[in-house]
Image 1: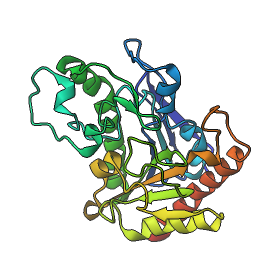
Image 2: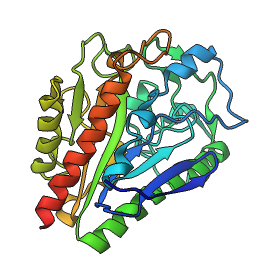
Image 3: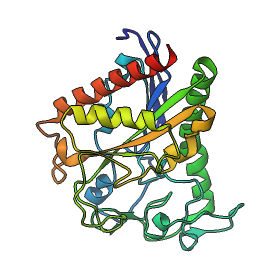
Length: 291
């Protein structure tokens, strides 16, 4: 286990912890758990609804991964402000005011209000916006929050690729126990963990298999591409043919917290320990493949 970890910080944007001993080319990226709301952020929704959009405590669940040689990267800004796990052009044109310099790439997510700039809270379909975003505001959020975060993640992966010849990336998320109104699986009860690889497009299968097998060894119900096949973080950065292997982990948040009171649950420390062990197992997996 490593004993030296350096930390870097871009206020309001990201925090990164990097091991300097026994490091492996593995990064855990946490893009949707930030709660540093920019001062200009406004929403017509009650604070409780806004807070519900945050994947709470995920950064703490994975806090131990640098001790096993993995890098930890955390987006500080909330996804209610701009969602780092969406494509930069995933905008509903009806909710954009002004001219944009390139064609939008509107998806079913943005049409449901869950695009780059969310306008509903997923569980209750509560409005987070009551007016379109201006082109100038959108550009500000992209240039000062979204791109600095993704550029940092891309730089880490490129550095791994250059130094080790390979890079491994896990995008860390949490999901509600039951699908909400604005998501693709409304009313569906979800597994303990769901691993997303965009159906094999973003990683070699051995990496995903190692994650699933480890989680199952702890007694969890771990599924593959069952609820969430993987969104923009793995889509943007995963390139298995180029030596960059990306996958997404969704954890059922009812296991580690009360979804109504937001308090940490009795199993929080246990699950946190298992995820630390997961990073250790993956470090062994990566070292074994490079031996």
